[in-house]
Length: 532
Image (tube, rainbow, N blue to C red):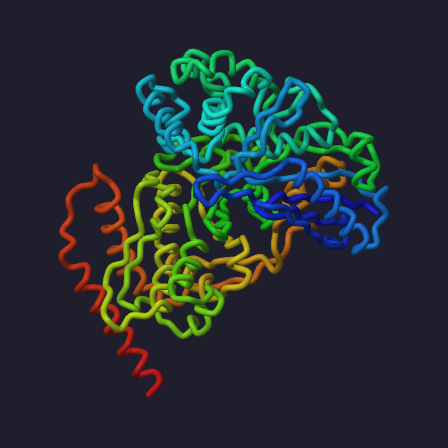
């Protein structure tokens, strides 16, 4: 049997999927770990490295038992993780603290300092991450940690992204200089790029804060795409996992990027990984700067193509917040949404509840809903929020297309599209393109695909996708609804840039509310005629 293990480290659990070269998925198991929060600090979010590794051991044992597979037959392991989730280590690769998880937002001040100085010093890297450095990313978190842990600075040797730390642990690497770093992680979150010589210059980092003096050398080790090996499984971890020592472990990546591969993403596809937020992933042969897009990195998704990352700062979180305020759940509130018609609510909702990640790159924006009347319900708002996230996605895809990214297919991956047909149909109508939804979740399948290539089972990522990626079901645009959304999108786009972009040309928005009411009236009248 040619079996590989694909591992996904999510925000709350580790998922392990076993895939066989001919039969595909053999089984999946997961194990959870705690997310550490502080009531007095809503920006705090950390996790223990030990908790995560213990969860991996549990999930691996469970899936081997479930699938009836002998661990000796596992030929490779590959892993993806959340990002940017950052851990500081000492010279022996021992953690000095918990991971600053991707959703830890304590480093806002540090991120603002990095953005300001990067523009003042004309650091080329800042333009390639959308022009704004995020408080969710590596340098901001590392600087915050150094500022707030003076007693540990003396033993600080380096810092690693989650995917690189887990791979190094499994390979038994004890020297930070020998750890292979992910081009995906470093390119999207650490201002790294071959084009400008790797990491930012030490002069820039020292000017940012003297605490960063000498840090560039501490952060330097090989940066590689995932067609290279991080190493091989150590005897210690082979025993813990119940598999064979010496099997290959490729360089890891971020979960959304490999979810895209697991969903069957090829050049010309865009994958919307729709969950609590939305990560939008595309690939292109050409490496071209895209204003407002948070990452354009060669090799970050597919080793031989340029990965392009964008997204919405909140999607499912918005749906849950609407339901929570109504004293119910998003699942319960979604019942009956399939009866709604395009634009019938008369509401236009911008998805800025957690800021704008792309294309305005402004974390200080807030949610806006236009068109309220005294009879609107929470369910009306939920439907308008689904429409709004679709409109926002269209703005992002149009920006990508404007700068040369081919978009021939749209794939809705992530947890929400698996369970919300209404969302998929709205997206198809708003984008006026077929929307494909994987038949099963691609989470950890992308890892399995890279593991199979590392094991030599398949010669290319594409060959592995043909065998391992799930099929799709299609949601086709409905011409009548697509025509309504074309009118609504013009209103959304005008409001989006007028409210969110200081440099936008002045627009007359006085007709927006009237047009929303007129569209809603037409849709209500049309629905009445159809049901008469």
